[in-house]
Image 1 (spheres, rainbow, N blue to C red):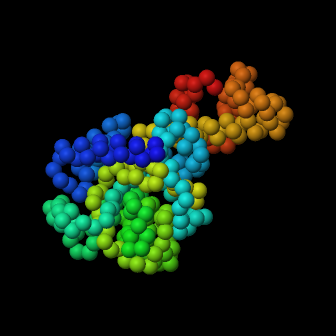
Image 2: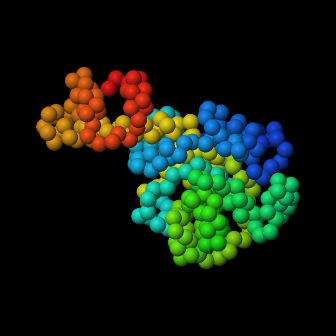
Image 3: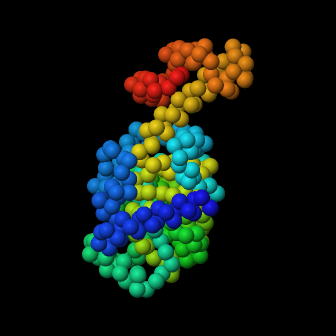
Length: 313
């Protein structure tokens, strides 16, 4: 219920913002900037936050639970969706920058307006509008679509569009809907898909209504430019302005766990001491352990020092 209320509020906010600009299929850079005011870094040409490749690579190594915990502590409780059909479930985790697409049931007058506006925006007029989100993808983008759980005749891509997606983004897709030709899709080297189902039918009685607008993906609210982490256990969307915090906090937590497990095996501390708020003795021991860490730390020394400076351990 909470995720639905949050989504409705976000939709009303989105409608209000979009009402201030001329009709567009693809959101303007100004609109996307207005949606994501907390992001202060670099942006793509279309206005989406452009989080760093380094942070996206580090995000792959973090568990969904760690990411969820940090987001929850910052008030973001509607960013996860599970129960996916994954084409290659045992492949490496996928991360990237989100491009969103909203699909709706077909309404002829609305579809005509979208088609005409797409023409004015220079979008390809041959084929279906479901190719338009693919045309805007760049390296590192992940195509995320709300296909409103339509299975039969709701298949957003097959192997041809799958190849087009991978050639542009070198990433896969996340669809709250279905795809067709899973056998062909599975043969695209490096490509993966998180979908709710597979069906042999072609897309029908369905239309694209907007690109790079807020969408709902099950329990999650997704904005253009979000960072995404997808693996066989689920999908979680990270607001761009929180990505650095999520990654570094999660990395420190994993180091704390590694330290705690080692000290428990050594019988230096009792389980209750490690599982509760640490004493000053344990905090100092942890900092000393970090300074003599035998492997390569996941973060730079500068990042570690800045993080620890603001905390009591």
